[in-house]
Length: 101
Picture 1 (cartoon, one colour):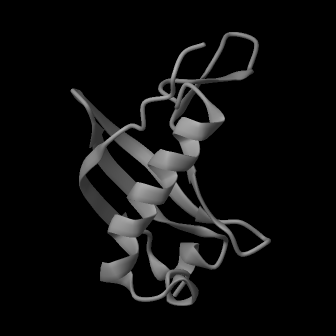
Picture 2 (picture 1 turned 45 degrees about the vertical axis):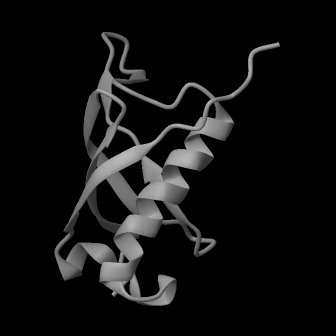
């Protein structure tokens, strides 16, 4: 059994979306480093449930289906990365409830 190694996220940067877009749930874009990889173009969204989430960049295939360019390898890695990125963003943005403003 392979042991899960928690990814270490560094160099988190956040660019807020314009206010007129934030009402739709798109709060902005994150850029961060995981190990030797710089990951850019990750959207920070507030879901209709109120939960904050990261959406990774995708590209359309020939059949119109969307394929991830980069993504966490597992659900656990996704949660770990999301927690670290959102923790880095939120102190500069205020509380979770203020992040949508």
